Amino acid sequence: MKNVLVIIGKLKIGGAEKIGRDIGYYAPSSYKIHYIVWGEDIGDYEKELEEKGCTIHHMAPPSHGYWSFCSQLKKLIVENHIDVIHSHTMFNSGWVMMIGKWVGVPIRISHSHSIRGPEHRSWFKNLYENTMRVLINRFATHRVACGQSAGEWLYGKEAFHKHGILIYNGISLKEYEYSQEHRSRIRQQYRLEDSFVIGHVGHLATVKNQIFLIEMLPELLKVRTNTKLLLLGDGNDKEMLQMRIQELELEDSIIFTGNVSNVGEYMSAMDVFAFPSLYEGMPLALVEAQTNGLPCVVSSRIPKDIHLTDLVQARDLVKEEWVSSLLSVKRIDSELYAQKMYDLGFDTQGMLQKIYALYK
Image (cartoon, rainbow, N blue to C red; front, top):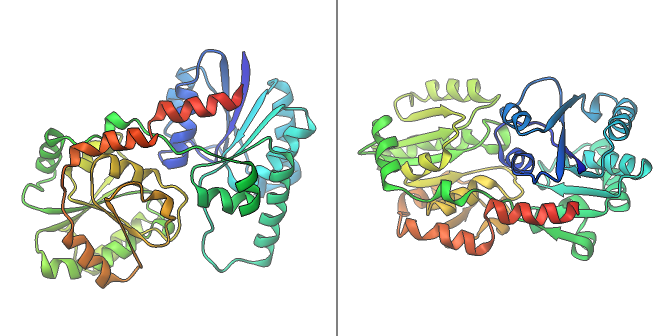
């Protein structure tokens, strides 16, 4: 049996986290999966992974002390006879790849899920990322990314073009197929039968930019008074967003669902999907939305890799443009798109087979 160490920041509900979860949840019996997560908080996926025989190790992140982190990581690798390291923690993977090499782990995989954040970066941040990029490229045996832009960002354009491996984030396509039954049930549950429903899925965090949708909503309501904004997810920005909703007197037009396990059913209830992120890698929510046949209006800051079907429109973060686009789209042949996404290779099992092949 091979011992695989998957390093993921958190095992909470989210895009990259779901990929990390699926690796352990569906792992063949020939692999024993260990996880490292940051901090002591118990993530949403931990219980089910432990029930599948996975082991979860909680550690302080590298930023709490690089020497201490490296020392603990080395000890954990040796004590658990780790054969494969699969790190999803972006630039922090530099430390992981280096320690893995030093203690003789034969397979060391770095996996990129994102791209550059805000443009204003400190000299220390740039120095750290450049240093980690060197360590990753020197000590990783495999450089994986969920999209071309994500790979170029973490490893550098030349390095990814020469040595990179592109593995799309996969989903359980069946769960996201459009369903008229689910549409009717969810819309009835939230009293949305006669509403124009704009949907969004994501952590309530600055990068996801839900505040843009909230502040745009009054303009939409002037044109289409039955508009509702359906926000799936939870996060640190929730209180701030709710305060802004109260200021704009939008309480009757916005619904927070929190984290839900049946995202695909909620997507069937939506009329259009809005995704105004400030930056992203290869966002899983947009793979899910296109599988559902849901028209998508997205930020132009998101890489073009995600334009997988004719459902996606990219717009600059200008309210007038978004109002016009959101009001002009409509669902057509939604039930046909799951097969299109399967043909493109976005099913979970296809993704996992590529990952498990690297472990061999």
